[in-house]
Image 1 (spheres, rainbow, N blue to C red):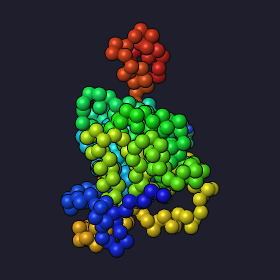
Image 2: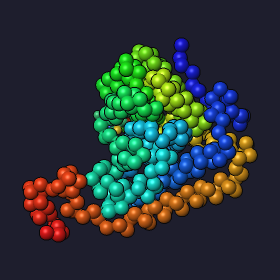
Image 3: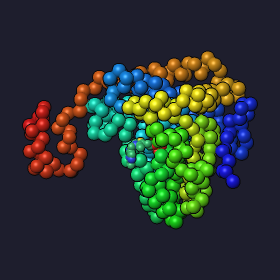
Image 4: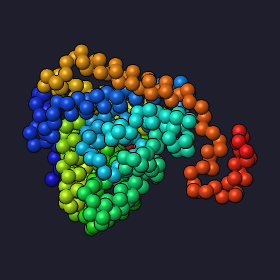
Length: 357
Ligand SMILES: Cc1ncc(C[n+]2csc(CCOP(=O)(O)OP(=O)(O)O)c2C)c(N)n1
């Protein structure tokens, strides 16, 4: 039997009680405003790339609910192993917008000193581990971190984000198996956005769902409406709580849709129809949540528009702050590797342009 798709936000504006995270209004507004910020960041970053001001960007329009809902469910101390599309999780956990934007410019405003690919940020202070470029390699890392936490008796969980394409890798199966056998406090969060670049999910698996795969590894798999921020919050929160309490891992499949291109280097018109995109546009997670909040009397139309504008202004401020920064000094290339710089790096630093010595 197919696993049910858990939905909280019903079409008539009510909330399914079994999937309701029962949030206070102030928390609903946190979710809402972060979703708006994420949408505004995408809009601006695509424009920056198209006008040649940044080199590359990975958008997440259409996936705001799964980003913000799952990020909201995390607690301080939990370990986050993100994928390149998870800016929302980072923002929700307190990674500053200006740091995300600075990393796209790769200049002196970038904490990664321009050494990483764009969209590959991290922050040790919030247990936000560096994005891994090779698909799904973050999964065994997350299981290792979770296992270490378990051995130390720490009540924290590790969450690993990946796409439907990631579920076809060896790393996925290795990680799921180890997590099942050792009952590690890991949440596997799959954003099933229907495509791995141009490859549709129908070519990715013969199973009736990705969540189903958890059966084979001896733990629970859950399918949730990934465009429903309340349902995502609820299932992720439950899975993380179970993990922290020693209940073992969970595989969450958030069913969603990538509305934009895979990255700014992709042309999705080559592999998707207008009709398909229009069908998913009706389930836009930002609009859906806005409508719910309006019906519930939590925001009115004027406030919603005002906050959307404020989100755009916040992004513009971050861009202004970062874009004017100077390039990273070339000599920084040899820094941060050794506590004391060895002689050969001192020599090599002299050959770099603009080096001080
Ligand atoms: C091991 C590996 N193979 C191929 C690639 C090139 N690549 C980058 S993203 C991607 C698609 C991943 O799709 P999915 O896991 O569904 O995540 P999504 O991008 O849809 O969020 C591929 C094939 C890679 N980075 N690593």
